[in-house]
Image (tube, rainbow, N blue to C red; front, side):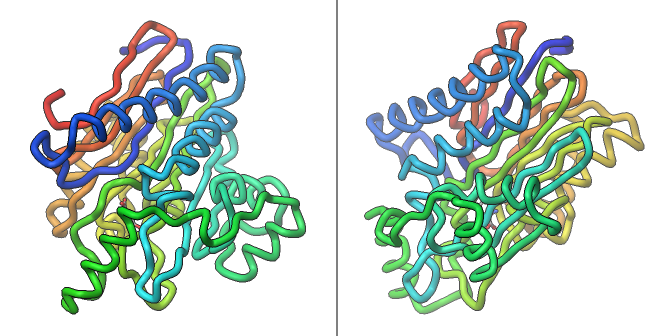
Length: 308
Ligand code: ASP
């Protein structure tokens, strides 16, 4: 729907989600969480706040919810600990901030924003990112904060299998948001725990600007989820933007084409897009993607499965 108001899209990850594999109680809880995140961001946008504030607010709600693979409830790395990645991008100036491999930050998206706004750099990793967080008063969390029984179980199953470098079966839950505010500006944010069993400081697409996260007022804001290695090789989020800006494609066409490229390289996952004109689009090639969208013209949707 094209309009001049605000619009928002969020995701909570894509994966092998089918009606038969999720209980009614879990489904209701996920839908409620998506609605809460959407509500936090929509309240900001409806009050003429910025797209940047809105995407950060939505992602913070999802990071704090252990149902999602970001912040609390993140997947467990090979050695049994947590390494979190996040990025944010401001479509006004293409300012961007990102962090990777942080272990003690409650809301990595807010640290990414701080990197964008207060630091000379775009991308900080590991101990340096944590030190920057301390210097700037970013809220820490003890390692136990991130622990969720379901993720620990996935990790135990992965370790018991003793096959594969990491759990290739993406366990849905990475979170992201894209928004357009009433001032016509765009922003995107993505946050993740990565993949179960990841090693050697592995970083996926989520915090990499242009792969999992992108925003440019001239075309769109994008957040991705899925097989990070492949989204990286496709520069997936940037590919959506380039197709819109240089080929003149609409958001849905560009998202579908970018995902087709990811699929051709062997990757599964999904993308959310908010276009400069306020149009929203979802694309995924998995059975489902936790997602929601709304806008000032009355669009209001929370969905999980394909075809909803
Ligand atoms: N894209 C994320 C990563 O590779 C995982 C996900 O979206 O679930 O780190």
